[in-house]
Every structure is written in C-alpha cells, then in structure tokens.
Picture 1 (spheres, rainbow, N blue to C red):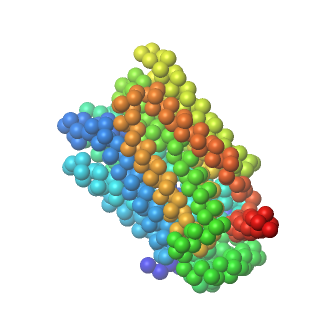
Picture 2: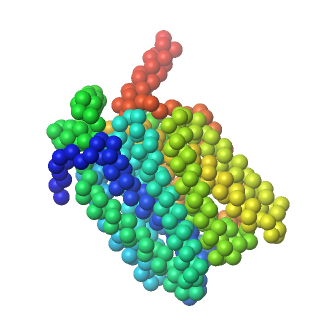
Picture 3: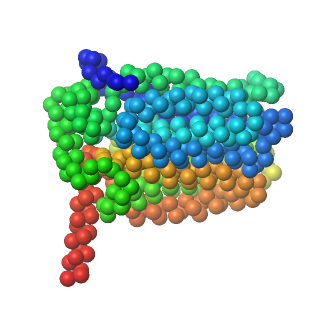
Length: 477
C-alpha cells in the first residue's frame, strides 16, 4: 500500500508529532495488555475443567509469547529496515488481531501455546519498531519524551489488563470461560493501530536511506519548521555519506569494533532490565499475592495497585528524564529494585503465616515497580532506540531486543517452577544476586546519551574507537 506523506499540513509540528506518538504507541498498549492479561487469566485457565495447567505448563503458556517475541524482535528489526517502519506496524496490527482470536478460542493447551507464540511475534516486532519509529520521527530535544510515551502505553496496557481481569474475575468468576473474555479484549486496540497507521507517514530517516529524499523532506517539514527540516535532512545525508561503504547492512557489520561496542552495551542494558525480575511480577503477580495469603479475587484486585503505580511511575520517569541523564536514572532504578526484592525475600520469610504478609508483599511489589517503571524500563527502551547507527538500527535493535526477550522468556518460564520448588523468599533472593551483577555492568560500561542527536551519538562512538586505536598504537610503540 503506497502512502501519502504530504496531503497538506495537518496542524502544527507539535500537534503532528503528538498524533504520531498516540497512534504508533497503540503497539505499546497491545504489548502491555498481552503480557499483562495472562497474570489474571492463568488461575482460571489452569483449572482442571479448563486447560488443567501444571506449574511448568503455566510457565509455558506465559513464556510462549516471550519466545515468539524474541524471534519477532529479531526478524522485525531487519524487516523494518527493508520494508519500512510504518509498513511493518500495519502488518503487526493484523497479527495482533488474529492471534488474539486464536488465544481466545484455544480449545487445548497446545493451541494456546501456539497462539501465544504467534502473538509474541507481534509483541516482539512492536517492541523494536515502535521506539525506532518514534526516535526517528522526533527532534533531539523531544526524543526522550516521545520514545518513553511508548513505555507509558505499555504500562497503561498492563493496567488495563489488571483492571479488566479484576472486574471480570469478581463479576464473572463463576463462569468457567471468564479467562477467554479477558483475552478477547486485546483485539480492539489492534483495530485502532491498523486504521491509525494508515494515516501516518514513513520515518524520514528510512526514506532518506532508500533514496526518497523529497518524501523525507515533506515528513520533516510536518514535524519541524522548514529551516530546521532542511538542516536535519542535510545532517542525515551527511551521516549516510560517511557510511557509504556499507551498501547493505549485514551481521558482519555488527563486528566492526565501534559497532561491536554498541552491541555489547545495548545487549547488556536489555538483559539488565529483564534480570531485575520485573516480569515475574507483571506475569505472576496474582500467584505471588496468592502465595502470600490473598484469595484469587483479592489478589486480582490487589494487582491493580501494581498497574496503577506502573503508570504513575512512568509519568514520573518521563519527567525525570527531562531533568537528569540516562545513566544515573538507570543505576537508581537498579538499586531501588534490588532493595525491594531483598525486602520481599526477608519479610516473606520472617512474616510467614502472618495475616500482614499479603499486604507487606503487595506494598513491596508496588515499591519495586516504582523504581522499575519510573527509572529502569523507560531509560532502557530510550537508550536502545538511541545507540545504533542509522544503517544498522533495525538490525541492531532486533539483535538486542532478541537478547531482551530471551532473558524475559527464561524468567517467565522458570519463575513458577522456582516459586513452586523454593518458595517466595528464596526465589527473590536469586533475583537480588543477579540484579547486583546488572548494577555492576551499568556502572562500568553504560555511557551518557542525553542531549545528543542520533548522529552525534554515532560520531561519539566512532571517535572513541579511533582514540582507543591510537592509544593502543602509542603503547605498542
């Protein structure tokens, strides 16, 4: 389907960028809902008269989406480089819709896992393409706010899932198929995403990369004033001219020394975000609260607090990123999540059997999510969208987010098994130890990217590599 990028000015650049952000981040909303809805659906789905799930099968149903997301992120980045960011988002909307129907009407656990895997392809693709699209559409001073709007929509999707889960669980909990209603709701935002993206333009940087200079300038003029649009177009073209040796991005290009350093840092950031254990709470929050002492219905209602704090913390994180650098926020998030997990481990052991334990655990999961969603997660997705050079952005993001989703898959698959085998306290101690390793990585290797254009970030990595080579040569002499 050929797009129209001009068609007249539609409002001011600020209004245009707001529309682009709202529409494209429906991909993030679907990401959030589809990962969060399983939290409330699993207890009902696991019943003997439904899919009769063991702890391992619960992990498989939850993590089937994550394995699909790993592959979707990997393939989505490459396809977005070839076909375009907008075109891919249109395709993902269709996958979201039909895979949701597959999950809703799944007659067996095998069909459910397959449908969740296909749904994961769309989730993974959206996790790469939406932040890339937003980063390439936004001016440097608004990039942090625009890209992190996607994180806000992700946690909003999770909150919507928790609210609908609680409402349906309390009102229709006696209905054997209540979990199917929980899953079906995700088909609605998929429709909005598809129709909305029909009216959106392609990324100007992708258009320049494929020689469509006139179209790129038209898009930039809608998102900037004319003088700035021309200057930014020239900057993009100059950057591409410096990379003229890379006629087509291949995985060999990821081995170029300065690119390899970017890949190492990006993969480390992605893994650190997941090993915090965030998705053990987002996917299994209901089971955690049940294990602490809540009934199923009370756990569903209590879980809404996790969704509310995630949304509020993301607003806070967006505000903080306008005032502070990426690196200190990343490390603050890691320290806060480690402390919250440690307290869950200690208090779930010392207060075992106490009537206060469920409320203590709920307050600590809320604290954990404040640091995770207010600091760690938004900075992670923003930095991943910033680090890679233009020609390698789709491929680099794909490889990095593949790492993120594989880590997510391992957490999602193993958590119910660990919880069943070791209990609440010991399981969270494991995440504390792993989190300390992530904090060490961030301290030693993660650079600051705030206040630099995407082209300047690339230039900084190139120059760092040249300086390092010169230092090595000097020492050898």
